[in-house]
Length: 80
Image (cartoon, rainbow, N blue to C red; front, side, top):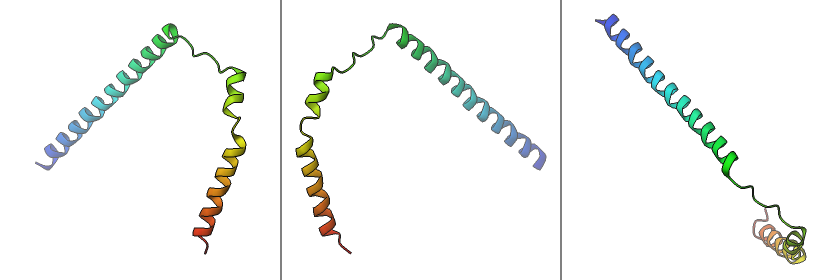
């Protein structure tokens, strides 16, 4: 009785591990196929122009002032 129960447990474990392994292998294959498909047919995004990059960094002084004020306020509130 005990031997049969142990044998059924091992069989169930092997079926479960086989199912998981099969699923993971199929997932890897599907991901690889989708990746190669997208590399073949997707258009690359254009790089940011230098003019746009300088526009984004134009408010650095205001950003630094806001961050400094927030840090100062936090330190005052959480002073030990």
